[in-house]
Length: 397
Image (cartoon, rainbow, N blue to C red):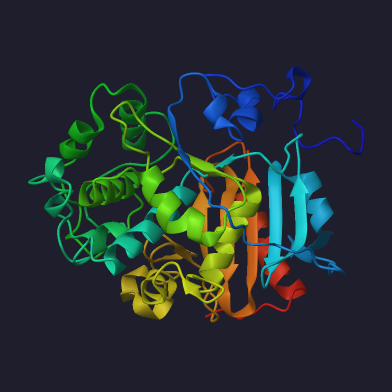
């Protein structure tokens, strides 16, 4: 195989021109479909319109060499890209582009599928709704707003507990095609049964609400329905008005929606690599662009600071590595560091104090590190290398 071949490019559809298709998770369709889902037959989408002004991202005059160590071997950024199925990678330092790479024929106009990075976007919208008084309190039950969930286990759960994925409602998420998230996604795609009926069907609690982190995409889907019910507007309209236009996005984005016209708040936001970077930079600036506060700084600190979470949600406690805030993953570093993360390798890592942001889009073979830990472990090693290379802070608890 030539030295310039990209990892598994034949299996990923290069001989066919990286096709798109209705089986958009099929290996040969992933590269094409996950960067242009709005062009896949049968996928319903709604545009998130950008505004007139664009937040400029200048390029570093002399980009520093980025290196990292993995399994006691040193690598460069370019070597990382030769080792893993990365479709796009962007690194920012104080809003300046240090590195920008596109792979497998992708270009800067691609709109990369978020998977669960969408959860963090949903959280940002919840914070804005709270700041604007559209949601009165995070301690109100979800059913106060999403009336069609009132009286159900999720409807009775406080919004704050949903943000921390601590409803206590039993929901399985193994990515094996037989779990509860598969049931939820099937209802989203087909409308039969309805998403609301599926959400209402989860009624057992494994733990009291608010006490324990257990990852469950259904909780974010409920948050999306709280947002649309509280505002009477679509997720796409809210994202455009509250984030995309004031942030200065470069390109339109889009949400996918189900047969009931409700956006998939837990997995289906799509945006360009640079605009994912702008979202990360917005978070690094505690919700500000220039002098304008876009998202509440107080809410974002509640969402991403380890010290503001109950002990059970801290790093090494919520999971063996990450902690969990309001739909953000919290790194076990003394300096506040957090991430948007989605299955198959999608991520936006942020360290606000040092202005460092790393965005990665990918087509990993396996959905999670539980199924195949190597690419996820190497991504973490790269993030630590980026911090070290750019003057970030890496001291752990």
